[in-house]
Length: 395
Image 1 (tube, rainbow, N blue to C red):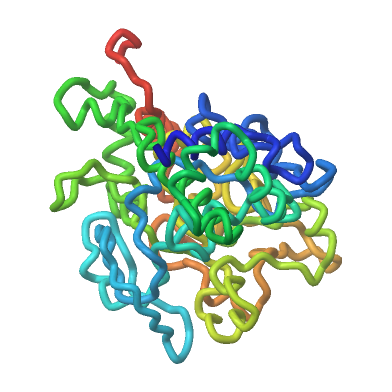
Image 2: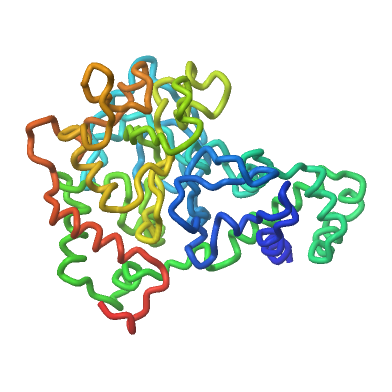
């Protein structure tokens, strides 16, 4: 019952400040609840002319996300204890690989939570974020509550809320946000596990030679090393992998000058440490870190990283492999002619950037961890993670 109300809310543009945007406007059902188009961010607000701060994430596969914490590195845990531990100095950490997570187990790392900075712990909390953001749906609690008090689809919600819902608009609103959360949990399309990879796990599909090569490179700690963060093995609970370790990394994506707010030289989006007003002091070792997303359905996306700076998997793989070998490919040059590497993270926090784990452990003049052909093979494997695969589609 609550999920059916949540579904109606998800598709209802009248809940927004402009009356034209619904949750589904950004999270398109046919695109695995990700955005349509190639724009790096979505334009919203009460008049539809305000630029969002970050690229729109998919809403799929969030049902197993643990609450935010900072603690020991556990690459496969879905039940991380909600603790906060911050190292006294520095963000340096032991190397992490796809086949040996024990070497990095002592690292203190951010993990869990929703949004790219982990600021919400539950889908209930997450639902209010875009709805009341002035740059996104730009609704107000009063408008949403008024809608829920009168619209036909919300009658079951009002019945369940009872007398308390009639006398407390806050309670009715909370119940509405809970309904949105229930819809995301109960609707199978948010977590179908229906990719070719899932069929392969079940013995119902075979990888092509290119997909198999990409899978091996994805897991090779000296090559792609992708599985160090995008865990692709079945856990002790027997559930299919989510292709994320729920953790955060500072990868130093280039500043996206296509976004309006980046024209202000004082503006920086620093991920985890933007969670709270004093975060740049209290969480300084994690400034510049953003959540590692699931790679499920990643081949259907058109904007990558928190600022949408890249628009293809080819661009992303090139950045991973060549960031520190050919930095001039990704970063601009300053007035002095020098490449402004890591230009979207202030110098004070650049020590947090991952330069330890392959393929980021290269220096100028060294060979890249992956050749162009090998990068192409990994992309072939990533394409097996798209939901909706059928045997009739071929191998």
